[in-house]
Length: 528
Image (tube, rainbow, N blue to C red):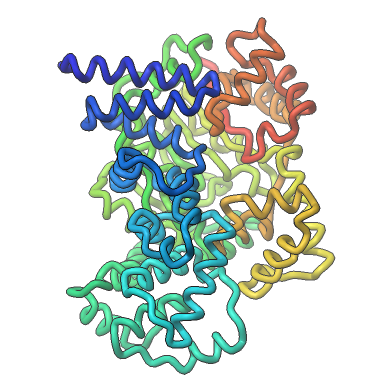
């Protein structure tokens, strides 16, 4: 039973949600901070704080209560650390560089998140070069930089002189190991396991774990998984090869604490005006198709009470990563398998909910893949689908024109040259938007975003046609922008309370082509 203080805290949280919906972000932050002071033990308040704070830029100095909340949020399992990148980076970078690189909030963030900030990237490139040349940085700072370089998969530019110096390095001390780890992963060293054992009891223990022990564990886990065939004559072999080389995304921490509920309860919250009678209850059976490195599978297992999850992917490297992260979190409700959804019989059983976010548009025939998944859905079951928007991917199309003109290959060198070419044209608004995309800041992200071997993009009339051919009902979209897109739709089409008319959404996207810049993320329901 909630205490009176928790009740008051929830009232402040509801006020914060209304203020955020009205774009009153400053008052909303004050309201959620008040709620957290009253009831810091409520996970939902920390999740709400992180969803709000991600829109903020700050300048030093700030009130102590804000730094305290940011610090506690960084360690909280209900918070995705990626939501804290913007507020913490802006706060740190408003100070002189030497102070920024000693900021405890920034150093912690460098370890457990991918930093999407060009100014910070430039600062880290300069700092690691200085360390390689003998400059003195605190060991904690050097370790944090090494973590971030590993998180980006060593995306940062390096000169020929730097490369030559690194090749001559034979790390013997913790500092030398940290310098090396800023340029190359420690598991590449011949005596990596001995180095991990030596570093395990010192200040670089986390670096040894992240760069040596975890990659070796992933390799062992993927070798333990049974192999499965891929569909002949399809794009599957090429897609598989890409993700074996660059599993995506390379996430470190994610939100792992939810107010677990049945899918029906979540859907009623998302789409209060949709017809949702007769949704399956009890223990949901969930299929995550194209699970990649496991984020969606883990979220499903935690988000849906009692869920039994089957997660499939083409890439053994991705599955090894996903399995390691799942065991790290102590979860046992997920079964990972290598499988090609286009191979008949590859997916056993039927499911109440199928998650297919970001997989269908990487098939040579996306509708055939959708049909194959629909055949595994129980009557009245749910699907959450993610598909690329042609309008939303205009910037990607522009970048690919540049890649073709420059004849850039999907290699580390080609990806670095691609980033430099994009940054060299800041006057081009489409290329400038690519340079702000979160995937621009990791090797696997750049390859997935700009160099994918197989990709399709859609318009909403096409999607409406496919939904009709399947006999499904469209329930509604999910949005990552705090409600701005939904508010624009309501203002444009106030009569559609359910926000479910795809013809109206198509009209809105023609007027606001960046409405689905990430992808169309939506829910549909099979006929009962």
